[in-house]
Length: 248
Image: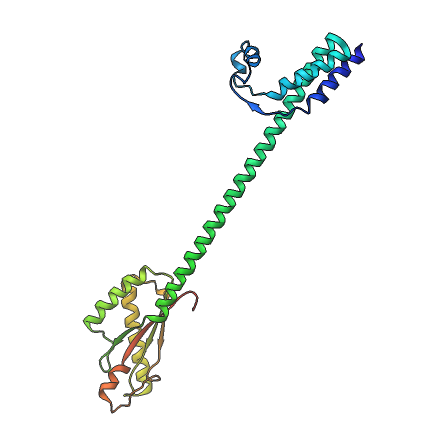
């Protein structure tokens, strides 16, 4: 008889394990479940019941009774409950894993979308910087033998400095020139002084000195002969150009 009782427990577990388990919370879905739960204390109020437990109890009880009579009925029912609950827990675990995988996929998709938008914004911004660097030139002209800027040029240079503070990615290249008159060494020193005057004004109004490159060309790039007094005014100049990160 003892062996039959044990066998009934095993059979109840095995047969009940094939029951489909699903989760039901609260009072349950059947009158029998409500009556069974009516005697539970407050500590069991949050307990999760599975339909497979009751299916397993029924299957196990029948199998146990057939094998070992009343004792087998009780043990078979108990084994069926355990098997049904185990199946329900496994189903919950699979569902939880699927939900986690779905959340991970959604997060990955969102990260990819944000990355694409960021790269697109960076590309657009770089194109704008390149357009400024390639298309904008500022010129300042000087009187003969002077490195002092005119009041209008000082005001424009101040406005330029304010704008450049908001576009930190641009480097400023100052090209300083002189006309053909005078000695070569003197023209070189004069162009150096002009470049320093412009650079000093930009720095005074907040431009980082590390962004500024000065190049003094003297009379090397002069285009007009010494006899062309009107043309010489175009050679006495400082040309401000810009370099973006892509072209530096």
